[in-house]
Amino acid sequence: MIVLFSVIMRNIFILIVVLCACCAAQDQQPQRPTLQPRTPGPQASDDEEIQAQLAKTAMATIQWDKSSTPGMKAEVQLIKKEQVNGKQVVQYRFKISGAPHNQLYSLISWPVTFSSPVTIMDGLAIAADGTVGCPQGSTMSCAKSFKGVELQLTYAPSIGEIYRHALMSDDKKSRIFFSFVPFPIVETERPISHAAWKLSS
Image (cartoon, rainbow, N blue to C red):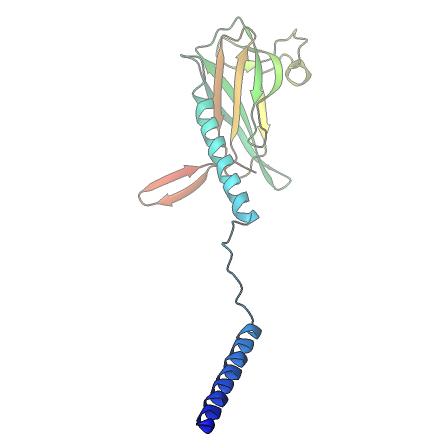
């Protein structure tokens, strides 16, 4: 009876030792790192901001062209195109229809890199044939470059670059908004060609 008790006690002791060893080995195993959810990096945020800005500029341009006083519009006419220092340079004139000729006008521009439109010059007049120029006796800002002559503007555009202009009368009653792309980005898909313009430079 004593011998049987001794055997049982010895087996229980061995079992306890084995269990302790297993527990110690488990505690020493390295814990697996907890996976953290990935958060969008700076690049994703930048891309979203750029896309939002492009959409905003596109909508602003659409609204810009629709903001003219009813019955008034501008025709952009190419005068010449040439190479200057290896870059394409173009010159345009503007012909206005439907606007009064007894008002002076300011020329406004809104480059896509600007957050808001800016006034380029004032004192412009619309002639009987619709051309825009600076009166001979003008003392306003248009006289610095176009005194007594027709307004002809020169540009050195990149492919797809858009120009947004407006003529605003001094009494604010006549507004002619217009935009143009000298060198559109053209994608050809037979049998249709698509012209596009870029919104950033």
